[in-house]
Amino acid sequence: QVDDAEVMVFSVPSYACQRRTTPDDNNSLLTDALSLLAENAELCDQEGRGVAFRRAAAVLKALPKPVTCMTQLRGLPCLGGHSLRVIKEILDNGASSEVESMKHCERYKARKVLTGVFGVGAKTADRWIREGIHTLHQLRDSGHSLNRTQKAGVEHYDDLNQPVSKAEADAVEEIVAKAVVSVLPGAQITLTGGFRRGKLTGHDVDFLITHPEEGREEGLMSKVVSWLESHGFLLYQKTTRNSYLESKDGPARIASNMDRFERCFSIFKLAKEVKRETKQPEIQRETGLQNTVEGPCSVGDHTHIQVDDSILQTDHTSQSQIHADEQRSCEDGGLKPAGHKPWRAVRVDLVVSPFSQFAFALLGWTGSKLFERDLRRWAGQEKAMSLNSHALYDNTQKRYLKATSEEEIFAHLGLEFIPPSERNA
Ligand code: TTP
Ligand code: MN
Ligand code: MN
Ligand code: MN
Image 1 (cartoon, rainbow, N blue to C red):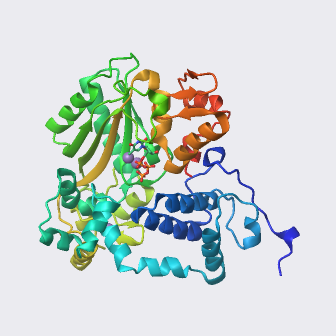
Image 2: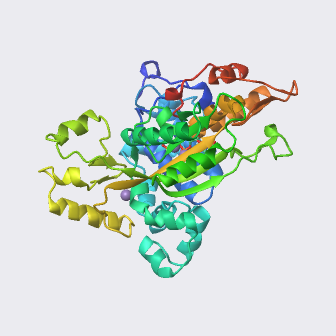
């Protein structure tokens, strides 16, 4: 029996862009389960179901305290029947049977391994699974010809499936900054994506590049890429040119959340810091200071021990541990044992924006994805406006609303400003 008067009932606005969501999570047991269901739906190419579970998880993530009973959830938005069933089962039994059986499902595991390859989406993975391909070894043996992106994805599978640390992001930023000022003095780079939101790890590192004099940014990407290539920092890159000016339909009508900036999806070759003089690696690691690229670091549901010279020197890392890690990385799907290479592969996204669109590009590339989705939904449904990473159009006034900062865009939209660190919906 629960006395309603004593239960803390939560209240949350329904659009993610109306909420403050910090990177921490008081309900990770529940949100992890719902995120897994979302991921599975996305892997099955069921985007609508995926979004529904993402929304439910995001509402719980925004709560100030752990949920202890269903009564507290009364009146909360975005919690559908399916999500509520899952939540109830976890509150009652500590786990969801649906999620647990999904985790052990062969098809789910195969989808995860195959879509874990950079350049492989849900449709390709499913086609392979129907042919009986469940692992990277089977993929290699199948003789399927892979495109250039997928080849790079397989080649760097283990590195790319290991989260990028903030220290590594900082190291990448230093390299990109150097490249950018070398090819165009006065150009500016800004860290975007999850790291701008204060996340401690990410699946990649995102940057936005611009120049305060409109037009000077033209042709900048190819120069930056050439610089990076000639200095040996790129393992892979695919550059797409700016298609914004060519679009006939105008920026307000770009339907998808794909923008038209000049961009580069790349894989960086990032040197691992080798500290031969290091006496107390354990302490260094805990402070998380400067270029502590060395592990072991806890990664999702399993721990990777990063093997490099610095860790070979630590007396607590035995050869058998290293061997165990090599085995694990093979079981994970990697084709190669964790090598002793002095570098690691890191996914990096570069985007170039004209200065006049910078605020929109910054807002659009900071995320989270659900926060972005709800910003656009808010604009359309509540304000009769169209927002994308290039511009904001007022459908009532039939004109573009200019902005030079994120704050101005929130103001145009009639929203309280939410800083990046609170956009982790
Ligand atoms: P991601 O790098 O995919 O995500 P993230 O940085 O939030 O999380 P992670 O730590 O896993 O890397 O995307 C960053 C933002 O970029 C996201 O808000 C969506 C935006 N984006 C676009 O606007 N257009 C695009 O074409 C892509 C791929 C992303
Ligand atoms: Mn792994
Ligand atoms: Mn990112
Ligand atoms: Mn990215």
